[in-house]
Length: 348
Image (tube, rainbow, N blue to C red; front, side, top):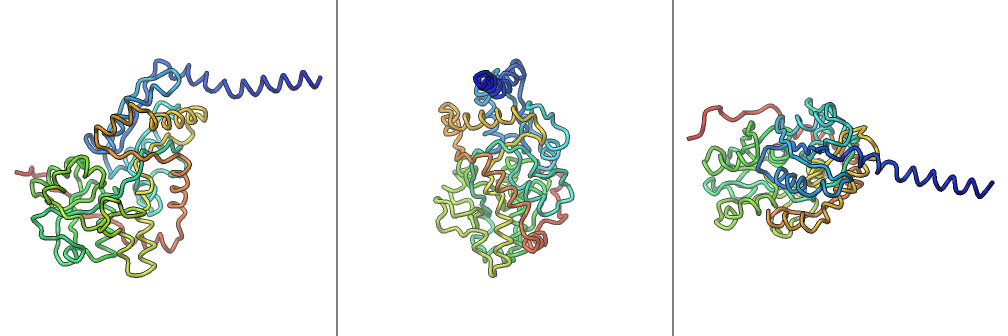
């Protein structure tokens, strides 16, 4: 009897382990998995998502095809709300969202229709410090310069990190950026920056190095601050946002505001996605990060790659959303309010 029980238990365990993969393989075979990106085409989030789409399907059972769907809007809130409330929960839709989305929940942004703690985090392609920089024609080269002179800075929406950081600088450090929102993507802001429509912006340092290295080489920009957990090796003399605080209260608020950088470019599946498919998506994401072909393509694109596991993302998200009330209140006071939007008139 004991022998029969042992064999039966072993068979049941084997079925429990093997069945989900088999079911998932049957499900994925012949299907297409969509990667939603909360940004427009051409930026770092979009480029690396397309590289993932070309590689990740091979690491999923059934080898489904993968495509990228851009869903910009609302400072990245449109896509994030879609993934939480509307996207299919069967494992056929995943997303890469702006890393400031969990912070937006913490700061009680009225456009938030999600609980970031309930997303199924898959992993991240890695963190890169954000930088705030000015165009060479402004004469603004330091934080003190930015405190004395108003400079027009371009952004997408108030919920995006490229607007959050300079706004926090205005409210907590005394800079005078005039922040104009309404641009559809980071790539559009780059174009109008060169035209002189705006004269400053915030951006990923890795994206800046890969996409606009001539700006650095030709000294067309001055990087006045970086945002992250520690200084980037390429910017040893540029201060961190949190280092510029003059008291502990402001420092804690700026550290919370800097939390998106710890998430890098994160990937997720909707809440309540079929459990075994979440496990397979995580496994396939990890395998893609280690895929030699994928890493070679990322290198050709000159994009940063320093993968962050799903467990680390979930921990960072929980710490961000559950920050102390006093720190949250200070950070909320420093956040973007309704401000000017770009003119509909075309630039000449």
